[in-house]
Image (cartoon, rainbow, N blue to C red; front, side):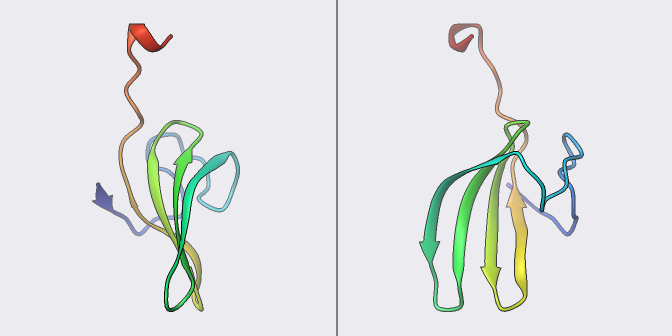
Length: 70
């Protein structure tokens, strides 16, 4: 996964604070929580929510689709 400092998905352009994204898991931390999410384009994202707000701190490229999954 790549670290980022942006406010939109570099793969589809959706704003990080916008929908659609799906929460895959959520984990409490000492300062807030961490969420693993999937953007509408399929990019896996790690979001951190703490006293500074919520932000995407890492993301992958969109999930590859295969003929078997269609």
